[in-house]
Length: 125
Image 1 (cartoon, rainbow, N blue to C red):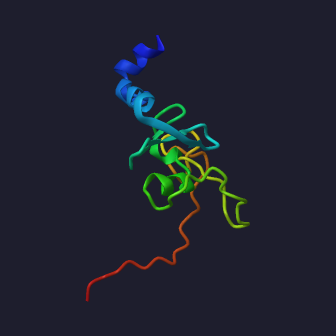
Image 2 (cartoon, one colour; image 1 turned 90 degrees about the vertical axis):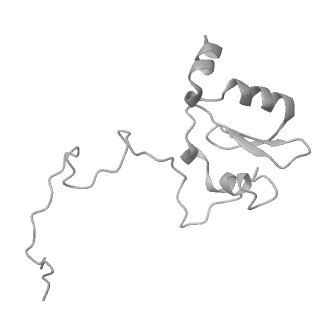
Image 3 (tube, helix red, strand yellow; image 1 turned 30 degrees about the horizontal axis):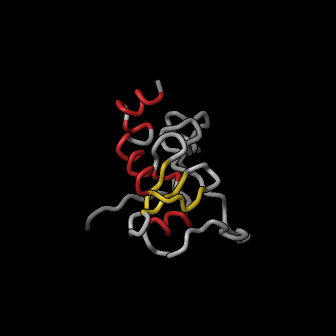
């Protein structure tokens, strides 16, 4: 059943051609903490990712994005400790229940603060 789903819904994951190409010419370069698997072509320059779940490009952490785009040569299998100011990577949450909703948003529960009266519209002279 899963292969049938992959065959007719290519946007849900790996296409049959990508699976075949990965099996035939791919070499596993590493995985990230989200379960995405990164491959490179044996003896070639190509690099690609097989997503864990829905194919969403914002799920790729910055260090793996740099590797995919040939910014760094070696795969970041051990990225090292995070700096104190760094936050954990989050995929794009737009359209999900966890999306940011500012106060006063039509879908948010909070009420917008009343206007303070300090706004002065521009008027041409």
